[in-house]
Length: 299
Length: 318
Image 1: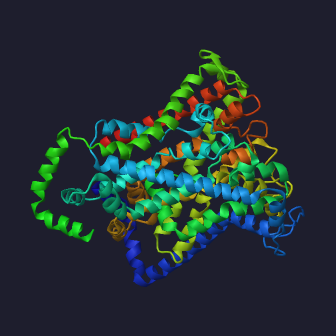
Image 2: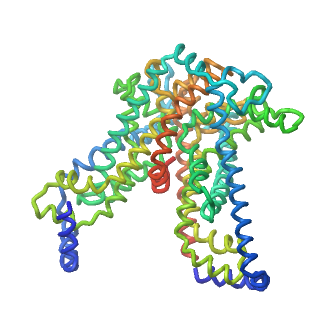
Image 3: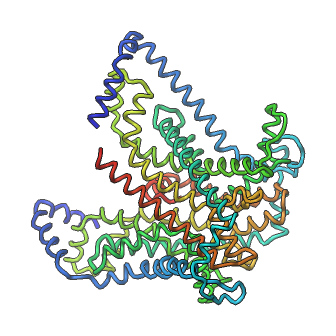
């Protein structure tokens, strides 16, 4: 770090005089120009980033004008007919409630399992603790595509294919939550746990009435990350949910792509239904999401 | 709760004694049976649904699996030698490498630039930040589907926009391999840039402000400050991002599956989509599919180890 600063000093020297010659006033106006430039750049970036989502919303709530050669970036006439068409033709309500069921159950199981394991690895003494932890750590590198075939055979042998459990149980085996939980719980002071032990509390009681109440931020981050992950999960449900009445929203969406081809009014309406809940969740809990992405590297 | 906290605080003057006592206990072989209850379920799930299937992939990669009955017979290393003469696999391997080499630096470079921008004096910062992050929570299927609309050659918004801006013809986003690949890259950067920005922004906020103040007093201009202060200090974030982004790009599936499904021809086929098609498509060759899965895993593993070692050596040198 010391080296870095001295390097900067050595390089900076030649321009030093010119900066001081301009005086404080021009420097202030120069910084005002800089702020304006930054705002302009931010606006341009934001327009580009929001553009695909804007196109989706506009197309979903407009009449079927997508086939015209005209560029419509504003909803000409507001209508919900695209939604009505999709809902009438396909069991979208069922898909939505399937998504809610699968996401909720997987999230509950995986958060409970992760938090308990995190506590175990952070605060309890047991044999093979480090090797077991490294084993779990290494599973984070296993790509879904690398285990599709044996996982499918396993779930098939368990008789789960064609049921929600085929998605929920393997989905609950996501190990990233264990590391977040362990990291968080390492910071809980041992004195608190020792004191409770002296008071006669058993491990389950300590976990329930001391560790969990201190872990609310952890629970929030884990829950949101898991909700996002499961709501969007595609490849594995695509393989094990064969019956259209069991589809979750992403599978239904991909199925409708084949049905509607280029009827983008209908397709964008369905896309909006799929992404809407997560976008709302993100806007409300942005701080927790960002913290989760930053600490887990999951996305 | 509060009494426990007070107790802990009250204990702190005698912490040395308590500390050594607990250290002594930790060194002893006493173990808590409740650990089985707390750690057991996670280990069980990971072994059953991640570790055993991974070992299973190695096993099935040496088998021929019957598409209908699911029974398997030994095939030796034939599944691996098949790869060398499978043009689609070779193309998918090349495409995956290209896709990784292009998307990782681009999304990280843009992410760093945006992080520097958002870390500076900037009105309405929260709004801009939210907009850049938003695509992160959108599913790959939705992103791919929005992509098919944006890049549709006939009715797509991007070509209409280009015409409106005075281009004398649309871009063949779907019928030309190069442009299809470009569309996949653009969509990926759209959803990934926010992730790099989050990590870089966290790193930037840890850089002490007086470093810049000192450099600025010494007359270092903006680029010099970036080159000699910012860039070295976000090194650990860069290391982390290279690993996470390369793993993501290596395993890309949802977006490409929906946006191009590997086409036109096999110009956007990647290892992820090809492994799925082989194992669960019409051919249903699950032995070969498992072998491709093993290749994806081994490549991820090799990359992570190499990157880890390189970073450790760099730290030693520095």
